[in-house]
Image 1 (cartoon, rainbow, N blue to C red):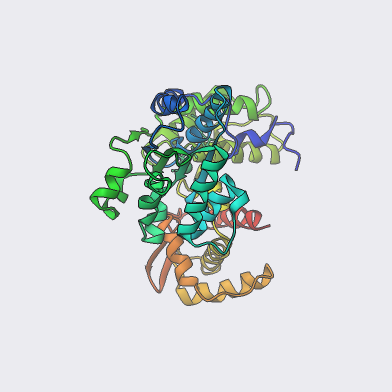
Image 2 (cartoon, rainbow, N blue to C red):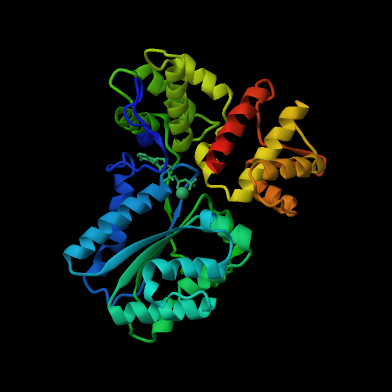
Amino acid sequence: MSSAGPIFRDKDKLLPRYIPPTLLHREKQIEFLYSFFGDVLTKPSQVRPRHLQIIGPVGSGKTCTCVRFGERFEVQAKKLGVDLKHLHVNLRLLGGSRVVLYRNIVQQAAPEVYSTSLSAEELLYQLVKQLKEAKKYIIFTLDEIDYFLNLAKDSRIIYDLTRLDEIAGPGEPCGLLGLIFTARSKDFYKKLDEAELSSLGRVPLEFERYSSHEVYDIIGQRASEGFNVGKVSDEVIEYVADITGGPTVKGDIRYALDLLLFSGTLAEHEGASRVTAEHVRRVVSRTLPSITTEDVVNLPEKGKLVLLAVARALKSKKTPYASLREIRGTVGVVCEEHSVKVFEDVEEVLEDLADRGIVDVKSLTEVGISGAPVEELSAFLDDLISRVKESIA
Ligand SMILES: Nc1ncnc2c1ncn2[C@@H]1O[C@H](COP(=O)(O)OP(=O)(O)OP(=O)(O)O)[C@@H](O)[C@H]1O
Ligand SMILES: [Mg+2]
């Protein structure tokens, strides 16, 4: 797919998965991470692993800050002759299984000892042994720990991962230099006991949601990379920033990026010479900040199929709610269309979609899409359906 055209210079620069080289309004936080972990590189074999929590609302830059920090820290380590790797594990994408998580970690950090026949405990043991032998070090980010704890209802991973040094034995390096946990709020504290909580590190680094001013700077930078010169005015950027920094969107940069991308696509589609505030207004009326494109893309396969079925069921009924029975029926059709085997656990998948704030399950006869705009329901559903379909393809 070519991403350049009359309006766009490079659409990919507007996707959330792109992380610009400099993170405006998050460089201080990266500095903080440096000072928090920095000196572990001087004596890596002697330090105990450090743990840090990062708490901040959706789209406040937690993930991209950790990723950028990790990259720079790897470079710094190399300069000092330390073989260090930053691992980033997104628990939302990985699901709620402890052994799947450890397999993923071992696959990334010590592929030599990876085997599917190892138990969770054996995986960790092998990981530590291998790192120690090879004199390799890791620092890793467990992204969205709150989501994992909610789904898995199993907090053993905190216990396991914060005690890797015990596997290595007294005074021995375990290879792990640092752990960063991220979460959207502190609500997950309720799921942990005192000991687990204190092992996460005492003082969280808190990310404030981005203000309109900050969003303005950030998306101004992104727009200059994504759009051709003169195609997006300052007024448009300001408008997107005001909406994003406001009380509904609460600073979620992903939504701002969606607005820019969709408004630009709409302008291009209409053959307009540039993006106007009116394009943005029209996109706003048919999108929801709680369901950004990345939320859709990141859904597991079944989640996408069920979401598609919900949207289609609502569309054919022209009402804000459909029943579980109707959704099941539509799931059957959707699966057939996509040549996927029909599945039975539709209710569980709906529950996960509800946990993600995408659907609203009021009762077995009332399933809707959280906050869907009633007046623009049909246009909204069309947009959503095409986005889900694109992500399945
Ligand atoms: N300061 C920034 N400068 C440029 N782009 C940014 C900045 N902060 C966020 N973004 C963009 O927004 C995307 C979403 O941010 P990020 O994934 O880091 O948010 P998050 O806090 O991890 O959200 P969530 O709680 O949903 O996981 C990033 O991938 C990046 O493209
Ligand atoms: Mg994140």
